[in-house]
Image (cartoon, rainbow, N blue to C red; front, side, top):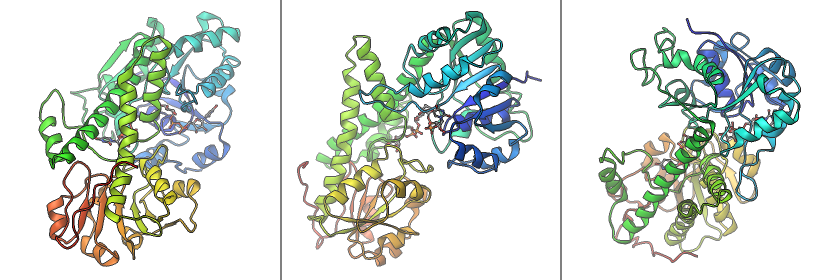
Length: 472
Ligand code: UDX
Ligand code: UDX
């Protein structure tokens, strides 16, 4: 039986809450601390503040058994050996990561140290944060033999975070001595020795007792760079295919076939090659900017990352122009917007391309009728219902009397709409698809003008080809 470790997780957000529940799932004793009292109260009552598959079940299974929630950091530090820092590291004004929450938490930890502790960076942080955290602990008078700081970056995708945690492609530990590395090995042992997967109630996934998780142990700096470099590379892959999609469109090629042809090369692979509205979320935009800033601080001009960002921003302008090209004028037009979250299977609207495009359309005088299966509550906080936007109970209600439907988020249900019903609801049969969920030929047969990304527009003779307007 693996060793049970007492773990404190600071931050019960998209990453901290998932980590806390999953550590309990693999057998550890967890106290999850957050300074948002409303959130802690909700969690203590069994409520789930974020939309993640499996999270409600695991929370119910471990609440007040393997995991408890608190606002009191001091007692949690005293009782725990490993302290995971998963507080927000939002993008600062210069593009650098804002580490003020991390520093505030480290100062609080220092005041409660009562023996050897391992501080673990779970939040995405720039390289050398490890050194800053150590310096901060020293400044608060903590003896060097009483703590170590390690990096254990998270590779969780929202919507699949629980599965990504329990069935990881890899676990990365950045530690500068054996003692701290061994504690992290103990924590992840149920996944790396496979014993977790042998349990009858283990979450099913790609790993098993015979094929357990891979652990990579390296220096703290290397681990910090692995996280930023991985996200930056994934964002590069997306911007690359988006740039190709614009070239494809100019010569009437088909980006879906191009991506399929590229992805069959095992060195490229099919994942993260979907052209569309560009990437969003609380990680890629922030991590690309933070990584560019970190390189600059080291005197390295990481120009390719600037290109990744520019291509991504242009992709939304190109989509906005597609809407103009299909509708001619936007003022007074009613547009049905399907999707508000930054991607399907999440309620998160942080840096959502869907929200950004909707704001541009409202500014151009259009009125929006929006629908999203999970993100409407969060969207209403930033785009309150009013004369420029309303929220519908279904895609068909959103499309009622609309001049066109815009598909902005790749929810699975948006790929299986009742297109006849949609056509009846619409004032004009026009669909502008930012996520390429349908095939142009099929849409033409159903009588739609169908505009998508990196593929020729589909339109009937009498509707006429949408006029391609230059970027505004
Ligand atoms: C965060 C970072 O933003 C991301 O870069 C990193 O990869 C993982 O951790 P996320 O979990 O999405 O991502 O952050 P968020 O959802 O904002 O949750 C942070 C939590 O920490 C919030 O619940 C907040 O209340 C809490 N917090 C923040 C504290 O408990 N104390 C603080 O001082 C600051
Ligand atoms: C990402 C990383 O995948 C994850 O490893 C890291 O820990 C956190 O950041 P996440 O931001 O939750 O995860 O979502 P992801 O599935 O990576 O999608 C990010 C954005 O890229 C979304 O806006 C999505 O719509 C877009 N995307 C993704 C594309 O446009 N095309 C693709 O092929 C894949």
